[in-house]
Length: 206
Ligand code: AMP
Image (cartoon, rainbow, N blue to C red; front, side, top):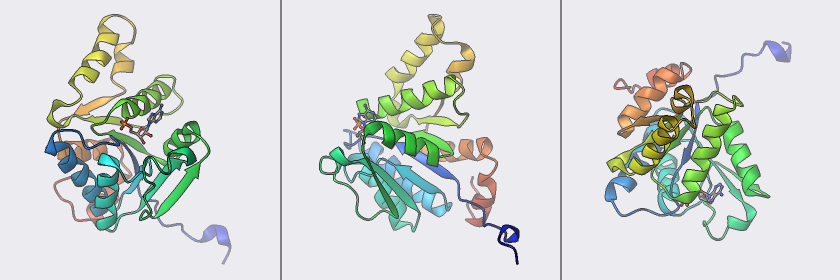
């Protein structure tokens, strides 16, 4: 049989999760991170994240690993110790810089889910959003607004539009969802390739 006639199995949908290297004050943040990791695994979706074992980053990775999911961690060498490189992930990629890390996370992912986080999370969101605004990609970006943690961030995005610095089309390139279930329902409608994995996983609610 010729190699090119062998059907390749469908690739699972990969979601990059950007989130805090701390837990944040509200227990709902950790619960949402656990729920996201567990749901990704249950739906046979691939988690791509920053490779650390700290804060919500560690929580989302642990939950996906516990659920038997595929997890790729991407961490720059200089952060290996500070963010406690996670040794339990399926694939660990150590990069030479932050830029390579973000580039690899972007290249491997079909969509981006922003969980509660701090400045690093904001940076990751803004870079992926501005790349989309510049039409360098057209992958969905969702902010998971657990406990309304992102209210000021969302207001800033809105202000950029109302003050005339971003078009309404650009503002629509990032969506806000209130909870984990809404995030996966929205991802399913934005990523038609997700339907097969959802059905196979028996997750009827999505
Ligand atoms: P934080 O939201 O500040 O807890 O950071 C979350 C993740 O973003 C961590 O993995 C940080 O290493 C990463 N991060 C911090 N600063 C940057 C940056 N300038 N560019 C990209 N990622 C960053």
